[in-house]
Length: 338
Ligand code: AHN
Ligand code: ZN
Image 1 (cartoon, rainbow, N blue to C red):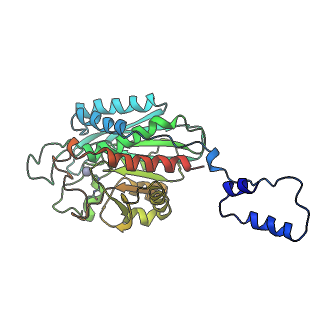
Image 2 (image 1 turned 135 degrees about the vertical axis):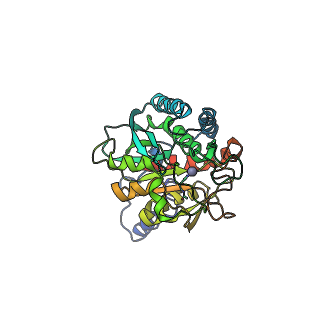
Image 3 (image 1 turned 135 degrees about the horizontal axis):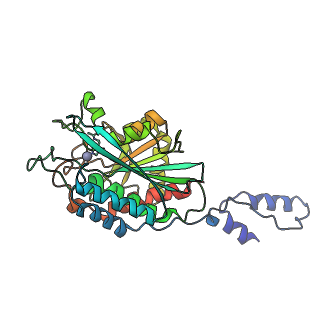
């Protein structure tokens, strides 16, 4: 009995209390006291995130060519993403419309929403943009040609598709919605990595559309997690300042989970202000769902990686280790939600 108690509750105070009671001369209890723990081990184990699979999902998107809204590559890749979500058991809703870009171009919009267990009231929102930048304005060659967007566009979607593969089997806790936003990356080019206030509204057109027209009227979720540029080799994830402002508890939950998984070297518990706008902002501001952005911070540039919005954002920058760190962390957070 003693060893049993010790094994079940290391460092518990129950054993000394029993010894004390015995020492005081009271009769030992007739039945062995049963210690009722929340018994985490009885809850379903988190599935294994397969980084090879996530890597293949990045490569698959890149193989379609740049996913610039209005192009055939964009259309074909979108069809594949819908199919992938359906194959994983999601109920898919497509949201189409037209948005106007900073230079008055009319752009077709296609937000893709994969709903798992849509009957459940409690929801978790996972999102990433799937379109890619129509030019390489931060580069010094072929600056008016569209980029591969392996990391910026491909990586977040890939991690979510791999997570999606496991979601139909999640029998406990909230339902999950995967939102693949469109026309995030068609923002006004600017000279600096920071953006001026006027250009902010020219980014994230798909998420801005979605928050005004959510696929379910009055859509709510416990929290949201945005993945943006999560696949570059040796990527580091600092606590993004706007996420800290809008959803500090979710930032702490995610970074704590990463640390518990031994990924504290990737998820650095330090706040950095470097994102001007991203898809989590409209979700926080309009729907008031506390939503964070997991996005690479490169200490060398004090912003994104040097490949950002250049032709270097190709499969060459993608590394399974980074996809794995983010995928395992997010899957664990989702699975531990009761
Ligand atoms: C800036 O904060 C300058 N851009 C964040 C939005 C973005 C563009 N994410 C990927 N591409
Ligand atoms: Zn971008």
